[in-house]
Length: 97
Image (cartoon, rainbow, N blue to C red; front, side, top):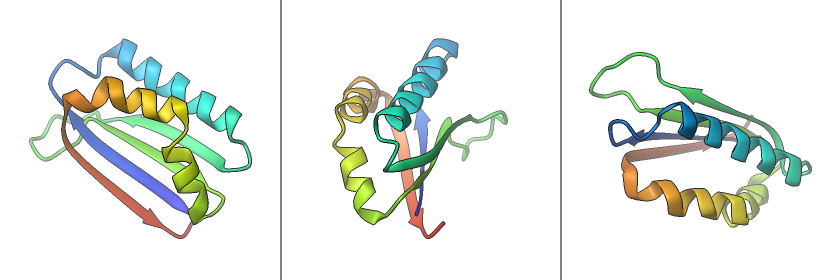
């Protein structure tokens, strides 16, 4: 299945260091959960428009049950604790791959 999350973070939060941390964390998640996370990409928005999000995480998961295991993984939980206070808007979308 495909799992996509888009977030708008407060201005100045998603700098180069944060982008690197996102990429490294999601790469680590994919290494730790190779049977669950088949593919992951972190995308940074490049066009400044009011309706645009800041970052998009795009994943291919083995099955729907993989989503819950990924969401409760300690690396994912830690990223949420660190960045959720800076999230202004969030949307997720799940569909067949």
